[in-house]
Image: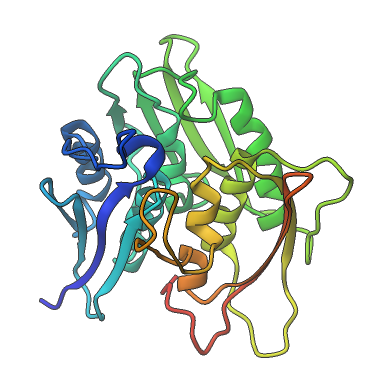
Length: 295
């Protein structure tokens, strides 16, 4: 059977969480056994095989379909790119169904369990649901349940995808994310007002647009425009939209890859206001002639 491999080399190799003060990289694997088990559970019925090389932090998704290798660098990226790539791999394999009785048991009382919402969101068909239990829904590494409500409002308006997150009345810490019927989104949505979004909402909307924006013909001006705060330690938004560059504050020769939306042909204009520490991001979908998402 032909195999289409998607590889992330040096996963989660970001300066914020994986570099010592002297600029040296830590030797601890970036993907632990529990997280790897979740990736394998999510892909288990799809035919996608997940492999991980702990000594190099290289993560691979082998998809049971023909296709060229797709290789990405994990330099200055985090778990968000892994969550994007696992969904992309599953969709390329034909998607997956969700059994209502399926429950993901999150290991570790303080695990940021709300990250798993982002891991399945774009796999859900209308009326599909996914349930998970355990972890810490208020862990600051992930949106809390109330914040997800705000994210879903914006995803609905901009993309037409509609979701609801609920907690069980009987079992504390048991949450279900469900996709609701599609609604007609705004066309060419542009953020109004002077108040910029925080970096977390911006990150979520950019990922939503990656999965939901249809490729367009030459000359089509379909787009979204967002105004976001800037944070010098944030690598999530840059991992999606930045241009390729060389060097960081510790290593002037280090290659920093272009953002993954650019890699897939999204056309991005990013105007930064350094004094105000804000950025205006305009994103246009890829042209039909170059769209390689395979969605």
